[in-house]
Image (tube, rainbow, N blue to C red):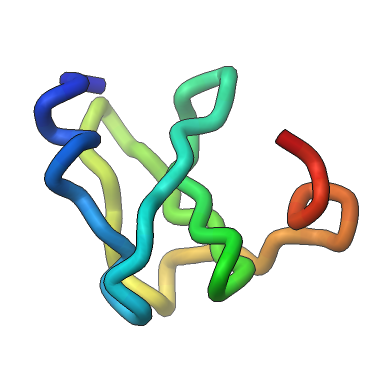
Length: 61
């Protein structure tokens, strides 16, 4: 994922910062507890496509 793109992306719900996971397959919003997938290098920033972070993921990283 392009670092410049990551700098301008924000959570579509709370407009907060996103965290790129170590494996670079998701963008996490800890405030909303959501993980947005990255498919073919493109972040899918739709709430209905996001998964909920589990308790460990919310506290980790």
